[in-house]
Image (cartoon, rainbow, N blue to C red):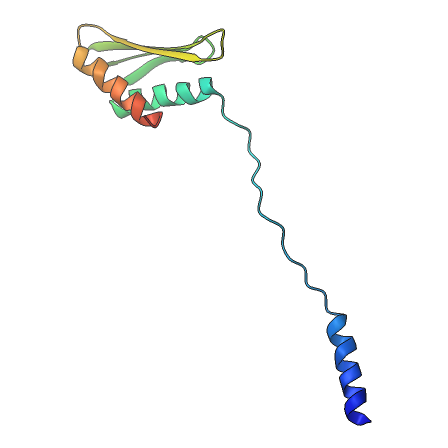
Amino acid sequence: MRKLFLFILLAFSLSSCTYYQTGPATYSSTPVSNYDRAWSAAINAFNEQNIIISEQDKISGVIKGSKNGNRATGSVIRLADGRVKVQFNTENNDQLNQAISHSYNHWMGR
């Protein structure tokens, strides 16, 4: 009789235990627009090439700077179809222009 009582007591005590499983992890973040991503990559490309930025206007998409007397300009332009056009120009220094483009592609994951 005592064993039966202990068995019933054990059965009731185990059935009253609640196990809460945690839900799957969800992460919420605002997606970064193509323009913001391109703008950040262009700024990072200038910084990576040690170009001293003298002007940056995100709204108009213009970045201006210089390195060792060579002026560099970057343009980030929103197109009507949602794409983004990025262009770099340097005065008489194709090597610097290529270096900026290479850095930009690196920051864009290309």
